[in-house]
Image 1 (cartoon, rainbow, N blue to C red):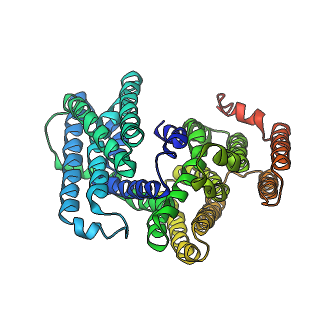
Image 2 (image 1 turned 45 degrees about the vertical axis):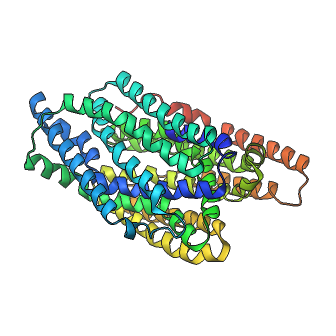
Image 3 (image 1 turned 90 degrees about the vertical axis):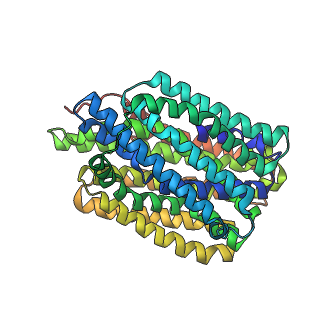
Amino acid sequence: MPQLTAFLLVPVLSRHLTEADYGITGSMQALTAVLIIAMTLSMDRAVYRIYWDCDSEDERRRYFGTVTLALWGSATAMLLVLLAGHSVLGRLYRSIPFFPYYAYAIASAYLSRFAMIPKAYMQIRERPGLFVILSLLQLVFQTGLPLWFVVGRGEGAMGMLKGQMIASAITAPVFVAINIRIMRFTFLWSDLSRTLRFSLPMLPTLMCAWVLNMFDRILLERLLSLEDVGIFVIAFRISSIVLVLTNGFTRAYMPVFYKTVNSADQSKARAVLRRYGNAYVLTTLLLCFGISLFSREAIHFLLPARFHRASQIVPLLSLAFFVSNWGSIMNLCLYQLHRTELVLLASVAGVVTKIACSLTMIPWIGVIGSACSSVIAFSVVFLVKHEITRRRFFVPFGWHPHLLFLLLGAALVCGTNMPAMAEPVRIIAKLLGAALMVGLFARSGTGSDLLLSSFRPSPVA
């Protein structure tokens, strides 16, 4: 929901924020993402698993007490270190002063951590009503206050970050009160130890994901300018809507995958998973194609002229997200084999590629080079995962329709975005191209019928 809201607010905020403002907020978002990893050590992720190892409600309350105190302590310690070392941290970006921008971002990262354990508890205990109410409360403040400071008071990037920080400060006491009700103020080293044994191995993978998705912003600011970071952030926000649209399928597919793959009839299981996987891949490809095809018109119509060059980057980032989503299906195969270290291996290969390509291509072709490096890096991750799963546990895909759709879609996007093409001709060509792709998708043996079947119970017993 926050990602969707951020996407929908782009036409409004872009009239009150400059490219540099978006560059500042995007740069601080990259900083906040890595700070959250450092502050929590991913202990919140361990709660979902270790909670069920507790034998009684009293033991669970004690466990929540240990994790809560550990998380609050680690976040507070990190906050103090960051404030003490602000002169060093402030060198991360060349053109962004520590006060007020870093300070607001760090405070937001810290205050938002108080919501982690209560929201995990609500999900574990299946309390959707309370979870939705509190999430909506957060959304209202996280959206309304930045809008007030940016649109109402014209404070630009500073108002955006200030509003987010105040929103976190308002909701934090609510989550602290809930946290106190569900925990006992006890601290057991044994509970902390088993939590860290589960969470710490996740840190390298999380850091790799951060590099693949966020590291560009640091390089763009240092090698180019804040304005270039802002253009990249706009393109990233528009392209990443595909992640929001496919997130529901991804969450629904995980339990279906594990139930199916552990069934008695393995030949039927692989056939079912092949159909589900193909439906997911082709649907994601169609969504990315639609975003890439019409992004130029949407950006030119909805956003001020200063952001129009973001339309050159959206198709590349959409392609990167498509390849990333395709590779995420293969993660499940490796998780089934309990070989999570192989996912890390693929991610490390992508990180090395990402850094090398970004350092080479950004000085050469600017922001477009950053988007190209994302396509190359995610392709490397995909190929490594494909080779690993092919050797160990592979659910085959229908390569021919995927490649056909990909090549046809790329040809249509490139052909209809040629600068010399007259605008009426461009629109007609795009509409015809979209109709062609949708028609082929509907007629495909791995098309819309399989998408619908993906949400029905698996026939494998």
